[in-house]
Length: 300
Image (cartoon, rainbow, N blue to C red; front, side, top):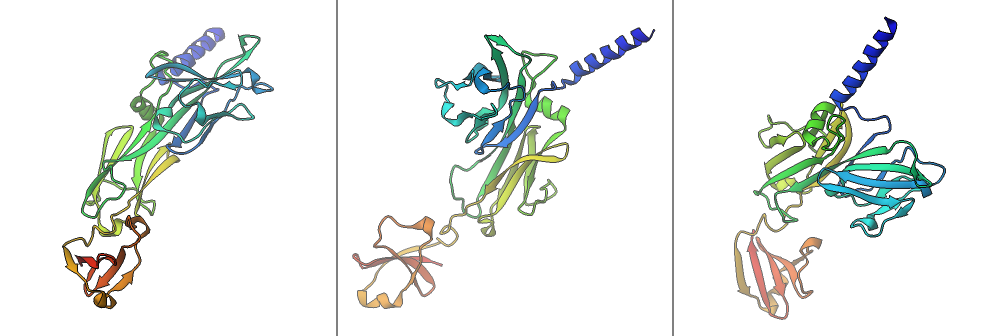
């Protein structure tokens, strides 16, 4: 009777593992933001790295061998960003969203695999903007997209993997937008439109104000209420856009130049020629060209 109970208990444990898709004991999950460097641990390495092979998988491509018996493959697209650590870990520089997926560390001795793979799932958080411009003027509407690129293994369907949406639901992972003070932004804030088209993406839409120059919004990914990684988006407003209302071209006599007060040019607004000077005249601001004796005034 006791033996039958033990068999039933073992069966329940196996069935629970299959249904929940629980990762193996050697599996590791690493969260990183695009643009950063990451180290993926090899938890099954032997006394040196000459036996270590690293493979890469995701749902959209065949398995790619990155490291073969301690030597980096030079015939792969991203080989310049890869390196092998002294502890056989895989180092990836300047992470891009396409780097997400399953990385497997495998050991070979005399052509025979030793033990099970040490799997590392890399999840990449990436933020993009609806505007292709590096500087956005006040009054413009901008949408920020924060997406988690993720792939996990399915023990129930081992050849298909688990989609990001399915994995996030089962693991208690959430995405948030927060302001500079670290306060979570919600749909109740009338200034922002927060939406989540899927579990792995969250958007923030707002109309920029003059005071938003250099303002930061941060997207965070949490796992069971613990922040795993984040990406910060900084607004760069157009400096001249806020007062370029009317442009007037006028002739200026050299004797009148004393009436103009030189102003420093913002570093990001340096003109193509050193002959131009930024001047103020009364309530107006403009550029003065000494050789052409001409100024372009911009009404304040």
